[in-house]
Length: 414
Image (tube, rainbow, N blue to C red; front, top):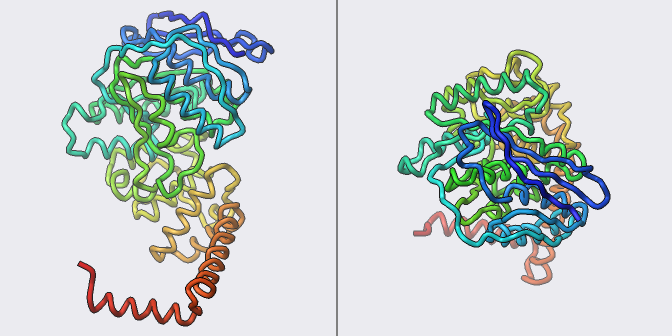
């Protein structure tokens, strides 16, 4: 059994902290404390529930196959959502549903009025922010707070990157008249020990606003992938809303657009975004991005396909054909991004040297091989259906499709 107890808060001159002790019967955690630290201005809205601890520890407990006992009150709506989350997670990954023991809190708590969005300065979060800002929604339905987290892509000990990112993100928040909430947490330590970050980052993100839920009525989570590209992932439109409570909802935002569409529609049109786009976690210079890692190369190619790379000032260099040929696509999701770029480049009639280099990199990845198999299988099924079920031969099928096109051209559909 995994137990979370000794839940407490403490305050310093500049911060307020929510902390709880994590214990397990096999001493895996060795009385490990999980914590979140917020600006002192959040002390009046710090939750009196244990909701953030459920989000933080449910998937690790499932991974270990141990019952989760929380010494605190949990939203009844959140408990019900957690049951559905476990059903989905058990189909996606090698985890299994577990028993959750906690005191339910059935009454709706005070509902906040603010709408927040996670914001890292990356492409996805810029898209969510700029799209919302340009919408015709009334002011009370627009984003008023931005949440920036230290401890995820910006490590707790990486002061250089933190200072660099914070300077830009603070300027962005000021320029758009948004209040910035900077939070730090040690949840990454749990991911390193027990559960992959690709699975865990969604619940880890969600735990952050759950701890100050009296402030918000809705929190937007910028989407990583479009509807076309969805697969089991830590933050997902199927699972993110399941972490909602009676007073606050979570919304997975941005699946309607792929990365190039996000740039073409909003991000590439914003001088603020083009000067402050941050996608890299390992910059080596005063720039926000290193310009050589897979994320930097992929994003610069996104920008070039959208026609705005030269307008972006946050990269220290431009990619080369050699960079594309040598892309490392072994990480989860990387081949999805590369295939997206390849198809968009081919459709737009882009530079053939770039296309050949990207094709070389993509063909080394598993997604290309899977698509080739599916394409061959689909063709074989189509031929068998035509021949054995519909009684058609390939030539007759092509002739009929040609006749259909002629008829439709002469008599267009209303």
